[in-house]
Length: 351
Image (cartoon, rainbow, N blue to C red; front, side, top):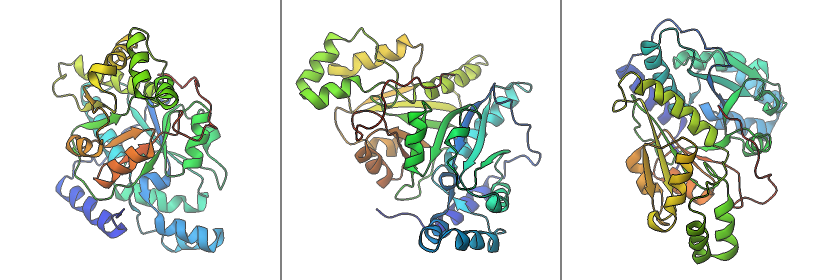
């Protein structure tokens, strides 16, 4: 799959920042962690660091640190999670307009196993791109996963699948972010987040029936249990957090102009198995703005129309199909579709 070059990413975002110089010159005060919806993002998810990673893997730590030091005034190009973080900050700006003293905001933490030696280049990059990220966690080669709960993380995004699995096992919503196969325009005034259903928002209960007994038994099971809510999956808490922020806009009469929009994009069939999915969301007091039941059709073309800032799925072929068509897709390593070594039924952090 083709991947945009660092130069292409730099050029794309520099054009956007030049055309839309909307970032305020004064950085707002970060919200208190206990009140915020905290997104922990790794440096390799936020920025494009493929060259630096190659140096580390091929030449070792000392060569890697030396390269970073020599290039610390050169900002990193945006990585796959960058558009999502920019959209999150746009939502914060609107919330601050409506609720000047409000603390229910997104808070972004840069969570990285980099040494503090690399911190200056990361700070320079954040300031260059006018990001509002004040909380850093640089663990000097150790895994940062143990710090996620201390930072009250509601979501962890990383380019490292091993660390994401560690976070999932700790009951923290997490996903591995992949770069899209091409650069696509995404909305600047509305955060769009798309979720798969089974093993992402919901548990993998129904998917286990399908894997073990086939499609007909799956349909029978869903029909027999359509009034029994599914257990929650790893991303349910994050959808809940988005819903609470949406309610703050609805309270100000902005339902139709809400800067957050959510999507359920599922391989389920609407008539045969969609009822249980929708009733489960209703039983939780949650909803998505749009629900797309694709009955097994590829998700990539539909996501290409939605243009979400991020799409979460538990199956790599859906992630790859979305990424090839320009969607930033994130793999959630949870459920029966994985290797089987992960724990199921974890109590993921609720908001």
